[in-house]
Image (cartoon, rainbow, N blue to C red; front, side):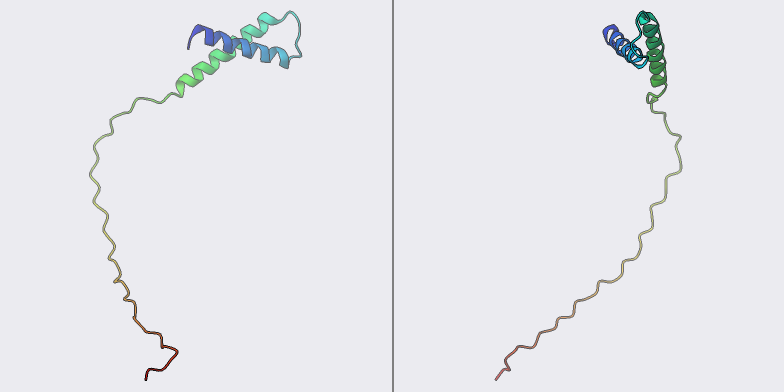
Length: 89
């Protein structure tokens, strides 16, 4: 993170704190220092949540292939003719 980005985050947080407290005059340094502390705390918490490097898994026994279930025989469709409307001569 660049210094400017860090400064902007602190500035925005200090502004939020200032507004939340009703915009009091003369407490800008207090809000700035509190914002710095909150941003630093959030930054260290986020670093702990980063994805760790992939660890090599211990070799395990290879799994036996799953047994295939026997398939039921396909049902043959009965071929039936519909009677025609007219009788054959």
